[in-house]
Amino acid sequence: MHKRLTAKETDAMRRLLVRLRAELLGDIGELERSALGETERAAIDSPADSGTDAFAQEFSLELLARDEATLGEVEEALQRIESGTFGLCEECAEPIPKARLEAVPHARNCVTCQRDLEARA
Image 1 (tube, rainbow, N blue to C red):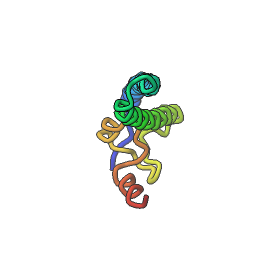
Image 2 (cartoon, helix red, strand yellow; image 1 turned 90 degrees about the vertical axis):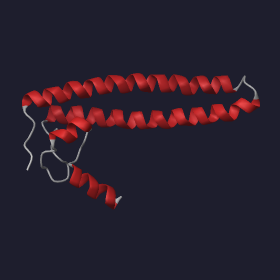
Image 3 (cartoon, rainbow, N blue to C red; image 1 turned 30 degrees about the horizontal axis):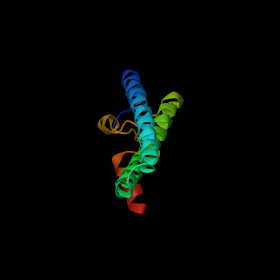
Image 4 (cartoon, rainbow, N blue to C red; image 1 turned 180 degrees about the horizontal axis):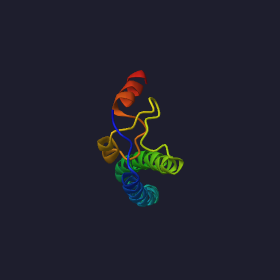
């Protein structure tokens, strides 16, 4: 059985999540500019370059989607801190181990429940 995070540990997690949110927002802005820039450049480059540009744009858009999803998870984790439910597994309601939260600060579930959810999906 794991214990709940202390107020000091929760505050440290809040700071970590805020930094992660700032990094993601910067990455999202850069990926948006990159994807749009590649679209504009493809219109003036040679046809041979358009395939490479299309691949790069698709890759940027996939990264953008991943970062936006992670940003949503980070925002929800910050809301869980405010509501007092941060660090509790949404499936079993047991405390999520501190090591897991340090690795994935926006984790919603303990490792066991997360594995079960992924196996069912």
